Image (cartoon, rainbow, N blue to C red):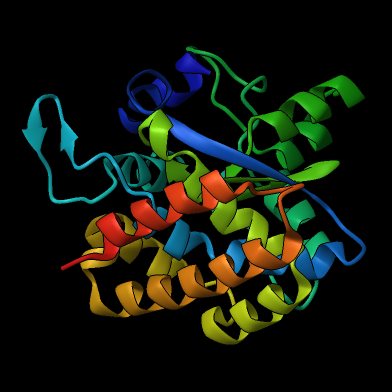
Length: 244
């Protein structure tokens, strides 16, 4: 992976060694396509609401989430919002096939997309499974969904992202209300979220509304998912992040 990323620029190696994302996994549920859509649609708000990397190498940078900036610039073929509402499964297959395969080249031989590599050489199912593990979209579909949009935040606040995602995804009413707010996945808004965070007025309003929906949803799904203490912690985090 290091050899591959070094062949295309500095962001990949910086991502691996100098950033920390918070990955939140959720089950596919009884309507996985709708859940996959909503997860992709909320990624800009997740980036903005949990941005925590506004400095790099000891200096302030012009990004609320410099981690998100590095993800945007490390490799267009394997990152971003990999979802198309018209046919998400076929779209993700094309996304995977057209991403460069890290095992297809080295320091002396050029890398190929998996599609090219598959047509020109002998590849195995193990090669394909490894390749899928090297794709880094905002939401990675597996036997469950991996949401990869949040920066790592201080441990005492971890209840906030868990509540935000869990309530919006697992409470049906909250999911429906959230759909009405976020609409379809928006790559431009995702990039803006990494730069401005909740300082951007539209993202701030959207985040505030989704937080209110998530807090309602947390009450509905109950303490089997989110404890009263975790709700209090999340409320304190959201008030702190969205104040001013």
